[in-house]
Image 1 (tube, rainbow, N blue to C red):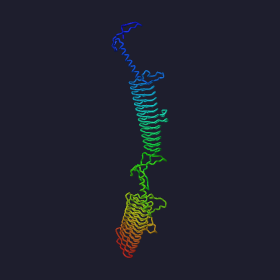
Image 2 (cartoon, rainbow, N blue to C red; image 1 turned 45 degrees about the vertical axis):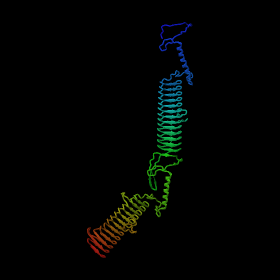
Image 3 (tube, rainbow, N blue to C red; image 1 turned 60 degrees about the horizontal axis):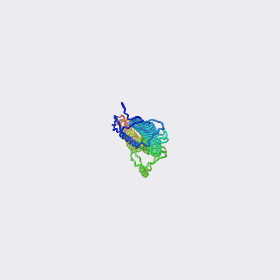
Image 4 (cartoon, helix red, strand yellow; image 1 turned 180 degrees about the vertical axis):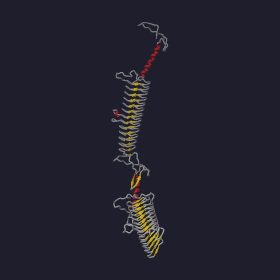
Length: 576
């Protein structure tokens, strides 16, 4: 490169060839002269290369910049390592990126942008279509102005929008962003476009398929034109179907599931608020049901548009079953009822009736027998004691301590107040354990007392007031009160009308009266005094001791014994 002198073999216009020049050395440092054979070899190589280039020339590839020089004119749009940029203003700045088309941009590693003004700006993103944008990692936007902004999202179709992570939007969105297919929730899927409104999957993991479909909450599914799933985990399948609450399912054209966990099955089906039914009452008996607190409902139709449910398997029948029952099971029940009805008709009760004169009273609904295994017959009859019978208007068997049993009250207003008591007759009263009152208005008020004899009412029947007392004799019908036998002491016995017996005494006969304990008065109008132990036997006889420790005896008609140790025997006699 720095010669010190020159060699000339001729002059200007009188040049000479130099022949017989040996082949010089060919290297990057050689300064030897080169002969014609060496240049010929080089020319041959160039010619062969030219022929090869011509044979392998690129065809059908051109870029027209309309005479306006733009970026990448000098093939410098690919600035990223191993990047490719093809087109006016194409730019591939990310490593391994590809930008093909006018004003395309691939700015991230392994990003690819294809189509006029398309942009792939995230790692492994792909934008295909005029104005398409893939800005999420590993996202795909395919279609005019398709937009995939979330990581690993897919937007396919004109104006399709996939903005949630892992979201998928597929379908043409018409002519504006408002009508675009839109998958905005993480993991959501929107498929279907419409000139009015595209599918919209707004919730995480939501799926919307069909024009105007809307999956508006997490894990919702809306399939069909204008289908709506608004509640979390809701499913709406069918044109204009609606699942409006959490967990609701609407299947069928225009089906609507209004409440949480409701299911609307079939075209036009509509659900309403679930209503629980706890029990029913048949003939005064209440029957409780299982499944009394439903949380939701299933509807197979709507009001005025009901449907039958067919091919239902036979459900289990028990007091806890919540299975659906089919027609054959109800038919069997109906047959049983019909057979029972025929049996009831064949064995109907005859010659038994209760006339309440048109005024309903107690026990009208056959509820007067409240004691176990008890019987109550008649208006206002009550049998509260167990294993007891109350028969007659207002007849009552009381159960004051909850353990009274085996009582019997028969007659209007008859009443028992203790176990094993028996009151038979209108207004008969047996109030103590084992007491017996037999006769109208008879009263046995003491334990094991017995009162036999009726009166016209108001306590005029026989009255046994002492423990184990026996009173036999009713009051005369013409005397309103005080005419019955009265045994008022323990183990007293009073037999006869107007008789009175105190404890351990016996009064036998009309108006026989015992005035002291352990005494005896037998005969009409006989009497003993109020002191001592006395015996008076015979009509109109009287025996009265002088002291409590004494005693007197009068035997015979109209006899009188007065004083301690007095004895009067014979008709009539007197002893004092």
